[in-house]
Length: 230
Image (cartoon, rainbow, N blue to C red):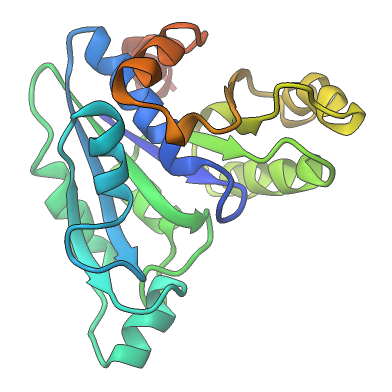
């Protein structure tokens, strides 16, 4: 299966912009890329993370459930009186998109353990898909703890963390950020492939594509091959 999941160490760490960068990168490799935001909260129809990815890359994506308030999906669904989709239902919908020469990029909501419904988290969906996971991390003070907690939680669940991406790096990073760039791959025992420049989400599509070309992101086959060889 050619499905890759993306989570964040927290909400608002740049996960959607990182997913857009990965989508453009894999498209440049010749793949048909399908971004998926399984569950979206707090956005009207026609808006949300899938739309942000489309605006940056021109790549259309899918969203399977939208809940009205900007809360964790289980809480937003509960308050709206909506029965949230199960991991089994989401997994089936995502797996149906998989095809030859295709990479399906699945972006979670918030962090790894955010509940998609009353009993299941994004981690459960990653396990159901049996896919490699990319972790998008904040890079400032306090980020090492969040990164280690996320990676440790993955490994306790036998989720393969293929690598990490810094969600937003300022042009002139402070001392904590500079040290975190060095420490994060060592403490988490997985590669930190790149850091997205601060403000990347505001770039025009052509400038965004040029930015992606400067990143040292691995080939999709390498990410997927490591998982299948375990």
